[in-house]
Image 1 (cartoon, rainbow, N blue to C red):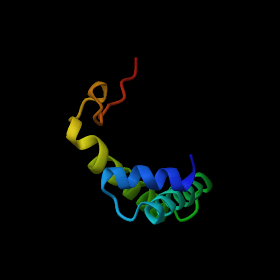
Image 2 (cartoon, rainbow, N blue to C red):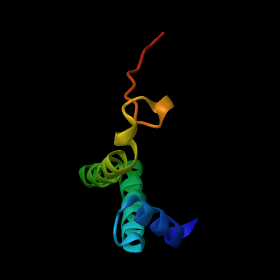
Image 3 (cartoon, helix red, strand yellow):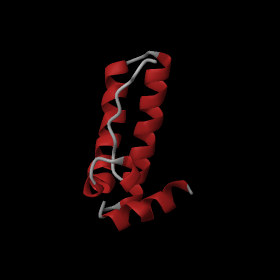
Image 4 (cartoon, rainbow, N blue to C red):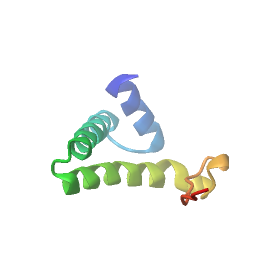
Length: 81
């Protein structure tokens, strides 16, 4: 895919300009994932990943409701059996 294709997808969703937003989102996910995985600057990593996921929920999934089967976002609780 790459950042250009992701930028085109972002523009279809109404996120303008698409290419810089795609680069920013990808960089945030990479830096945030590394930060959390390495245990360094975990508050910063959490904020970066949380911002990207919140944007995804609000722009793509919120219209479909909460249930994952209908294209929405689903909250699950852990159940130990």
